Image (cartoon, rainbow, N blue to C red; front, side, top):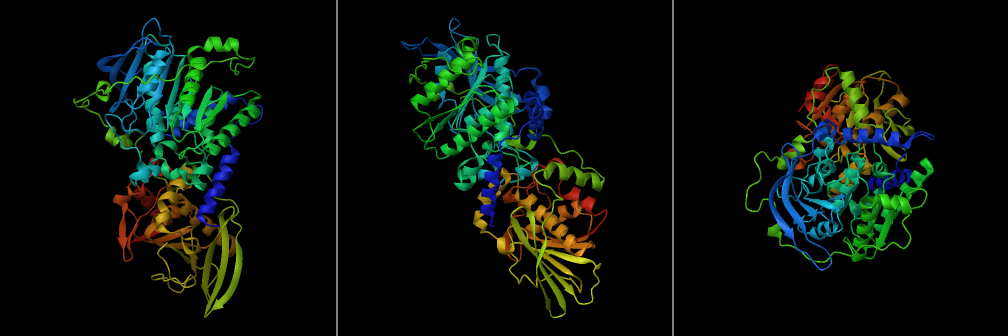
Length: 627
């Protein structure tokens, strides 16, 4: 198996498994709340929930009267900003319908990846206001008037975000939730009748906000629904930025997050020719969600897909469908409950969708919040990734406790003790050495190779040196050059990405992102392979003291494996990075073969420990030589 085949298999397994769910007969609502609590913690937002005790302060910098038409009366547009958290400044426009047309319902519109944000998408906010919704159209962190860094692994080489447990999913989801809080705090808004919608990245954030905030009444996601299979098989992940991919230390499916929106009305707008969100994948994911909810509760989840012929965009039909959905399920929810079927999910017969947008637009200068004025003092959007999620506490001083926390937090996607299926494939003699070729499976279906060279006369209990191949090791597999190995047994391990499983370095960017999406960041995968290789060696040859020898990108996995496996009594490492909290352009290191990247990402590890903490713990029970 190669890495692409493995990731495809993993994606198919994850997507087919769906969201999991409670045991038969258990309460679905309780399960969802437990999962939601875990989500707040996993996304690094739990410590910010107290900030929601009060709605954010809405600061108005100007007011514009929305032009009227023959069809609809005018509305007022407030230009303003709020702080989602202290220092996180979000610019927005608040569309207030004329008093006699306001319905008490409200709508949150989340912009997509357009540099002009609320200016580009103003037609939607205008039409929603015409339909009686008090509408807040929010800029994203990426393209707001006070911008932040958004495309970490996509363009910035910030794969350290994975180890931090940080994703723009948390940042954009949090700001949308605070937008909900702002609307809920307005006198004219009924907090039980607030919906959310958005396009592209805003369609994705509509999902995330609704998973975090269960009071959001209904959702319309336009071109923001994805599935793992298309991301890997057709590489649609390559065209997506990070706000589509939540932190995923357990290797769960994206559907497991989507499931927290049930049973609220959910409309997915899905263009059939979408480059970013493959239509067949969208249908597959949503069909499984509907079947999963029906099987678990016996009820129907009003989750619908509206397909139409277009690329990554709206169409007049899709906009009208969205406006109708939100009107029925948010504005006129009491009427819908009366007119719908017994389960409250059926649409009224003869439903006529509202008219499309009228095309009346304001110039960009009329809708910008700050114009030529500077943003408020203290705005820290540019460094949001450094402070939004919780700061790392002191690492546990006890090595066993530290190891236990790392196992539970960072390796929940797999079992570290499952059978590796070790098998000796060849036994021979080479000069005075006895040589054993064997295979093992760090994960089902992917065998890796190892070779044990045991000098003649060596006791079975002798200390064994373990050499971890790196991708620059092109020497003969049976006779690697290991400095100062001595006349001791030598075990050579080839983890994924080395030896026969090496892939071209130009594939790294895609593979690193895809592996992290599926809960297998490169650093964690390498650590797992080392641990499972050592376990396979024990199963075949018994327990002996081990000395790990590694360099380049294998130095950090060797260090972490030494913490997690107490049989390691010594380490010799070359090129150990000073930290795993480094972007690629900061982390590039050099040796005799040129430059290389540690690629040491392990999901959420930096919430527990960094290199210095792990090194300190390992040194309490093993000798460590660094070069």
